[in-house]
Length: 350
Image 1 (cartoon, rainbow, N blue to C red):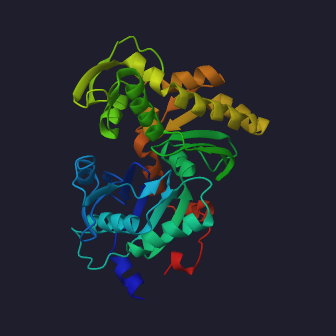
Image 2: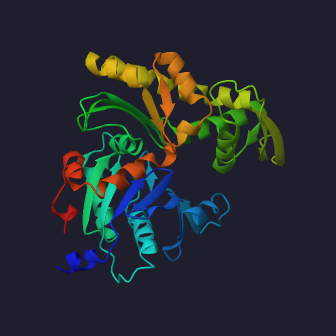
Image 3: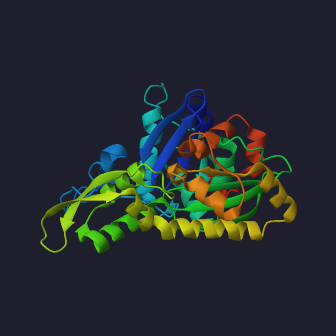
């Protein structure tokens, strides 16, 4: 009874719970939060010191008793308690301006493909622990397709490739369901690691995730753009142990991430090969849609189109497509009922 009462004064929330970023959407306001999925913890007191951007600024700069951690790995929860605290922080933050003493929102949340029932229950329990009165879980590619404006309810083949931080999810959607799919652990984070490995092997320099990610975002590409982009990359010289700076160019970054991009393209091909021919005909006509932060990699749509011989386009604002799709479901309870995954137990609704 109290949950229903508090629920009337709470803002229902759509959450894209990602490996690298968490985004929150509330009705009538849109996207209100876009934060890294990183938490800083004081191990002496077991207290959370910072969440999101503030915690990301601490990465690689903390004393031994402060640990920065990502509570999600490859799209699923790896640290339940920290995930629950992170979600509670986000939920409480967006209710600060309201008169709700105890927020009890309905939460629509994204989950990766091939998530197990145990992993699904962990997500539900974390959301309930963060204050949700009800939790609806929907597979990420369906939400991304909704956010990209694809007609998922029609009997038309819609192909979505969501390149996130921890996972790349490839899916063919028709009639509100996923017909064929592939889920890979090769995604944005893997490309960042490729750059770190390349810097170590070619330049004898050890660099951190933050520097490598900046290199990827600023000059990363899969085709020659003709701009001859370059950027400074700093780290520690593996020979002398002293600080070192090198100049890395677009072609070298392209060489570093080549293997990861190739794996994604090969799996797109493999997904099309097992898709029913009628749906393949639709995909050929309407093309493939890219979402996720990886879709912003320069030229990736051209690389995929060249290999699979199908038109490829990038969704508008691809990084937020999933959370915008989840936000649409807040106003469409019938569609949500059709596409939400079954609850794992009575704790998912209370």
